[in-house]
Length: 328
Image (cartoon, rainbow, N blue to C red; front, side):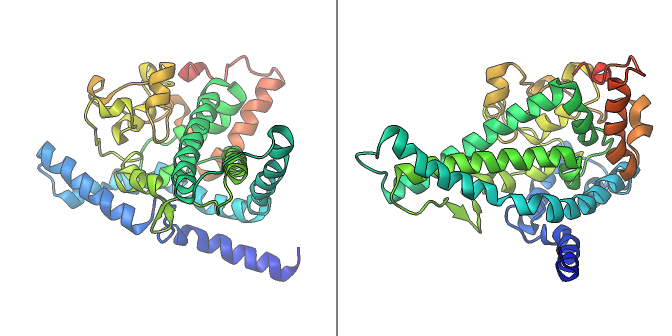
């Protein structure tokens, strides 16, 4: 890497957190933030709070907490990580799709009739969304159940206050896993549709985002990581994860461990017995237990402690089970 390339990488990494506000695929896009304000106002009005709406949304203990500053710090750190260590390898998804497109005819022959242009676009959008969501559930489930993976995912759950930026409170190791998963699914689904259709492979989009993802982002995704308990109708929460259902997932109460692990869809939790609906929970407190808060109250601790804990476990210097505190 030349000095100029390194400089360009640094500039790109510094710009990345700001670009989130105008990237239609980012939860922090201004449009999604404004729509979240509208939904937050709906919750505020129904609850008849005595404080002002501004004070309700922008609670000092939420946005200026030590936990929140860890969120902000990890966003910038991971921006550098994405630019220098993840970005160069995302081309693998395109390589995989082209290779799969070439191999499928050898295995199954060419399809007698390819998909129409409309069918290609609609089905590709739906299948890609469902496969991404299912794979996210599987990875998330493993993050909670496999001790080594939990040590890294614990960084996300160590937040004691939730705000929209908490979505990006992720250890770099988990970031690599998530990007590898997304790249693999994108490559496989795109390759299959290239084989099944003679038409260009593209998604149905709205303002540049997958239209199904747009709906998810527009209707309250930012409230998932917040103190605002937006609930859906009971029957809807069997299909889609509501913001409050995800807040239940962040609860430090043992009964809520390993629940509501779906991303957009609740059907995976329903199918595999990990679903908890809002009507069964009154309120939640966030975190992984008071005794562990001090181990995750800085950016450096969140980056280093997962490796330290694993090393201690593997060397046998501690009998503590990495999942003991949350029965993971």
